[in-house]
Length: 327
Image (tube, rainbow, N blue to C red; front, side, top):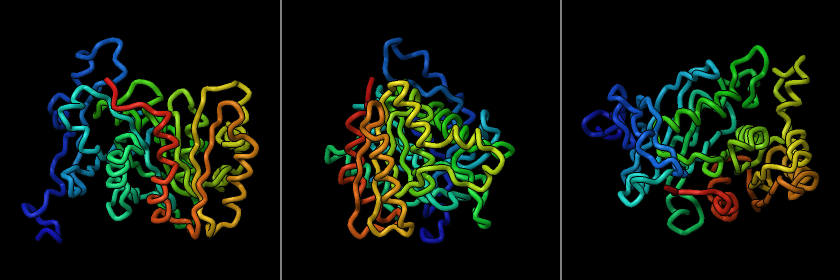
């Protein structure tokens, strides 16, 4: 019965509140209770309708909701997870950092980080216990508005005439997290991680909005936008090019951002490692663009390669510069 997810032998599909009133129960309310000088932001509400997608052995839940993005106009699924520390009475008045985890490939209709087979959630708990990582809350949105069965993807960007996936990732998803969780007011509590095209989207978001996001773990990423949908939109394409964004950030002298690259030495695209190395040589550790690179011996272009190796440098690199839990 559990295997076939038939209640009451499983809690899949049951409501999850993460300490917030359930959807329809008022939601929000907490913002007025915090001190004006607090670094944390109480949930702003309204509470989302989260349903349990999976329960981990430690009792934490991966939950899912359908978010109707107010700023992007795009409607899609977002999976969320909070570490057990989030509900620890010791941290009841603390805001937690958020890691927006983006997949590679189609990134639709699912975000592959929402499953437990890759071990991202359990790894974050383990790394935190080992003093390597912050106790991140995870946001795992769909990356694209449809399948890439025709080789079409959206570069995590607002491509003219297309669904505004850039606004979805950098506005609507963070707004969902602020509405439902105790988060951190400043950019010191906001980061991305991603693989392949998700690594590109996360890196680009941090470089484009360094006032909102501070760091990213980019695994096997593309370095420049290359979607076929950019055709005829060169100006907008340039505005979403990490190389040009990095140059602009260096020219402006900040704010500081932190990019932890990891690349396998057996990636399917043989240009991935040299392209990352060239980016680092050109823009990395020059002023505000701080970079690190972990080359994974025998590493291939897949999430099973990237997750274990995040704990061997990349997660420490970004955690050192981020805050949380904070009051």
